[in-house]
Amino acid sequence: MRITDMNWMQVEEYLKHDDSRWCRWGVADCARYLSLSVDSILSERVSVEAAEPLGVPVFPVVGYGVTPYFAAYPGSVSLRERRMCAWSRTSSTAYARRGFGASCWLSGHGGNEPAGALATEWMADHPEVQVKFYQWWQGPKMMAVVRSIDPVGSHASWFENFAWTRLPGVDMPTEQKILPDRSGYPRLVGEALRQYLGDGNYGGFYQRSDEEMQRIWDAAVVETHELIGAGWG
Image (tube, rainbow, N blue to C red; front, side, top):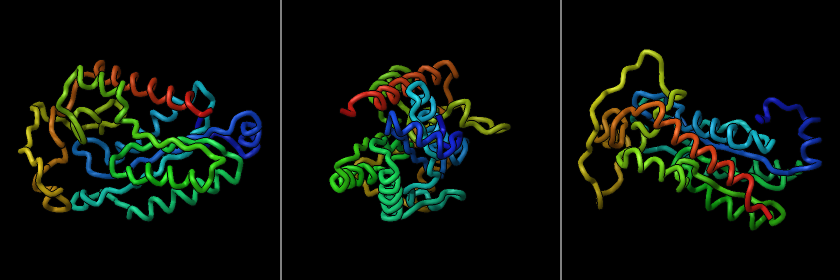
């Protein structure tokens, strides 16, 4: 259930029998022909669907993250790493003071990885609270389904192309995108990255069937659900 569908009295009642909560991050960055908010859309949806059967409240998505490398793409907005971590620390401390004793910081964007180290540091300062940091799109069970369908796919490719991340009236290329190998080279940022990536697809086809994508999504929801429900003791 979304915290936006609850009032403070319902939250207080919830905390009498359970202190779990669910935070999530997305990010606004370049995602080729899909919505700029793909990471936010997916992290919110997987959180809600996974937490719903357990009755765990899900807090609103944070729509910005660390993505400076996409600065040359209009609409891409990046936070400084220290700002993201400061927000994470402050909000988690506030939640803990209100009685929430367990949380999962779910991320939908690789640039938010520093929050994982922060979660461990924050728990050391707040030993009464348990935290899990989880990049939902890296789940091993879900990735096994992905690899069984198509091993070539990443950011802005078919891998993120679900019915709920597409934009109306936008046609998808039909070919598989192949990029030159840059293994061992420095990371590209800004205009240099845009020149290399073009539309933002990191490689692979742009779209696969809805049936295949639903298989991936179902696996992601189940895996995320299992993460919420286990290992808090």
